[in-house]
Amino acid sequence: MFCGARNWHRHGPEGWERRMRMNRGSWGYRRPRNNIPVNIIQNENDIEVRVHALTFDPDNIVVSVTDNVLYISGTREPEIDKPNFLLQEYPIKSFERSFELGSDLDLANIEARMSDGVLVVKIPHGEKARTPDIKVEIR
Image (tube, rainbow, N blue to C red; front, top):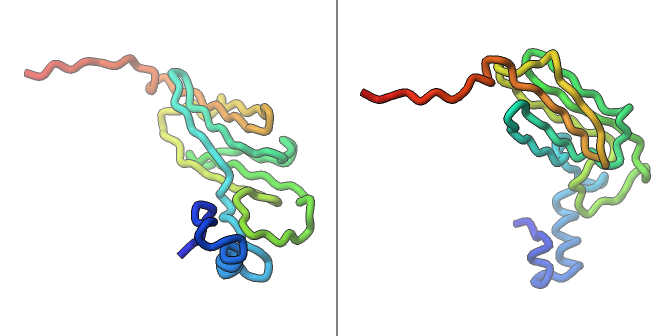
């Protein structure tokens, strides 16, 4: 059983640290490579992918599309060489995310910008996706 912060009062700091140590090797508890917060928003004219890449330099982030899959990855040098994590939920060296895209998007006009540590990728809808809703009469 994982002893998270909500159970702190039952186990105390020593119990929490002991349980966290059981979930990690000598290198510390590691988060999955894709554990960087992402929000995907459907707008009227586009899809907006917001990647919360705090402390990552935009020059070290790569955004690409291959076979209708959006790939986003980033790297950086950690502040501490080998941190002794009790819990790691945010990447210190690198991250990778990938998302399958629909065929109704205009992949030739993707835009990306960095604002306050958030990478915003905008993928416009294609003409087929912009067709107005049609009400079909049931007979």
